Length: 313
Image (cartoon, rainbow, N blue to C red):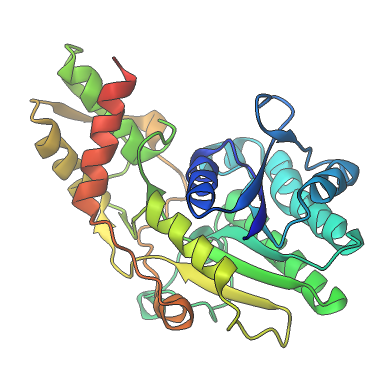
């Protein structure tokens, strides 16, 4: 039976991951911030001692590090806070794991495709051996965290797996993110709100995955022992290999909702540093673990919309 510790367990991906681990019979310690309360073991990414207490309580074989500031606009507003939480918070977790007296657990670090930044056409699909060129503070914070983990793995013989996840969506995601915002607005229109849907840049294309497929990729990486660890650290893209324009995602959601809408561009939703295309190569993950996404995008969009309808009831 796997023993796992999950940071950021109260977040969008964390809740799905904890549920999947428990379905598999794993013993899980879900960790959250001081404000989460409830059943979450309290940790503070600013405090190594709190992370050490969590490791002592969990005695994990695997640590899934999901806790982060993940919203790009917030990172643009508060870059120092984002660097502190995402980069230094990860470094503090690595230090707590270095001090851990038991057998060293495997660390699955949830990174992001934002570390690649905008690229020339010749670089697509994005592969793990590309140099990192983050174009915003969020991407930079994750790239810095990756560098810190690689150094820790090399210096202290850690077992680190970096999962560079591309755009993932699903029911219960925050409306701060584009697809969740579209679905929530459409659900409100279906309930009688004015038929106006506000959007940002619809021209960008993204490599979308269902959050449930992302979680299965993390579990596959946790279980796999075929990962070469000469350097103590391996990197995997978690992606579909297919880019879909945000405009097409919106069209599909409107078709699912079956409501008349007027789409309006909202300057408040436009980003100054939008990456026009993000699509990755998932072949390394597939070859090493056998993982492949199973949930079609249209099914995910139906589930997102139906979830938005239920949340408004």
